[in-house]
Image (cartoon, rainbow, N blue to C red; front, side, top):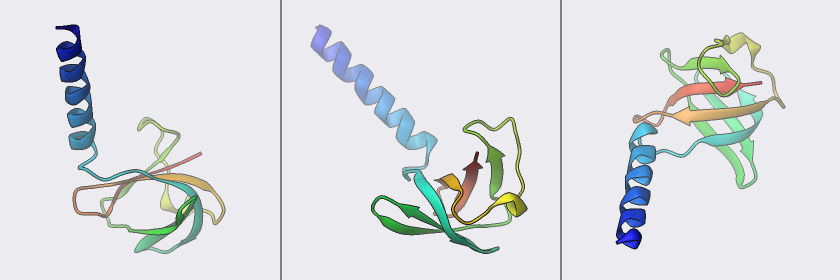
Length: 95
C-alpha cells in the first residue's frame, strides 16, 4: 500500500513538472551570444540556441518578482532560459 502511494505521488509530481514547463527543459549556462531574435547559451553539453520573441519576459533571480530588461544581457553572464510550448524563450533569468 505504501509503495503504491509513493508511486502515485511521484507520478503526480512528475506530471505537474512537465505541464508547468510545457515539456521543455530549462537551458542553464552562460551567454555565448545573443541578438534581438535569439540567445545562445553555453552549457556543459555544448551551445544551445533558443529563439526569443516579443513576449519573452526577463527577470533577475529565479523568481518573477524582479523584472529585468533585455539590454541587461551580457556575454559570459550566467543565465537560465525557460522555453515555452512553442520552443521560444518564455522567460530568461539573469543574476
